[in-house]
Image (cartoon, rainbow over all chains, first blue to last red; front, side, top):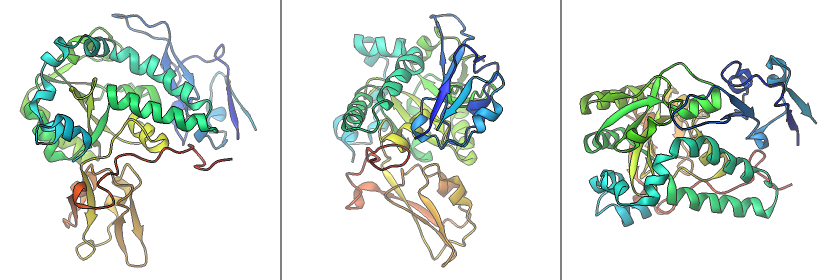
Length: 74
Length: 284
């Protein structure tokens, strides 16, 4: 099984980029709000390859990841 | 009749029972109030971690156990079921007040922030949802009953599946207009076998009327409709059908009808996708 490695330090977030979310044919990714508080707008939405078990290892996300935060371990 | 109808339907479909929409259900139940109050945060954060955690041991017996637990958790707290357009219109007449908001799933799964409002919320959930402004970045748009009916009819034509949602079953406070793979619920149901209950109907194609145009095949969000090139007609895999009726709306020939799930012996107790190892669908 392939594994997607995700570097949170490099990721610029779903609202600024979100390429992996939109492009993945299997919709493997999900975004999560960070430090969210009641009554406030949260602009830090991070990504995670939550549905990784559905990943085929096609590499489309890595090709389009602007900050280069993703890598694939085969 | 599904177990929700038996328990909460008062002789009708459970989602057409007006008692399941009243504010008192929230006011008189602390646990439910807490769930409704924190709903936006739950689905985005805790709900997500719940899924994440569940996916970790996916190749083991514990994965199957965890899936069963999750199924029970959703049945108790946040259960969904597809409903046909006729029933959705009925629900619009029962529920009040109604407003539409942006879809959280589309944002979370596909970074869709276009401002298009897909989700219809009712009753007290609307008061609490304002506490979480990024659940509703472009605001809450109140709808009259007629506007709400127009809205669901329009979404039906677009090919979106209507689903009712409970906030601690059987209190209903939302109708979503969903599609795969941008809907968290459809994903959870199809890939992992929990969260979305199958509908009360099953679609059937009258082969004599079908002219093989194939419109319905591309419409099905559950992968239940296939095209048979030998006879040149479409057919529905009834085991996979969720009974949403989206295919029927697009059939010019009127070849698709909805049958009561209860009238089909093998399907009358078929409410969930089997729990399985996701992805490959096999043990390794």
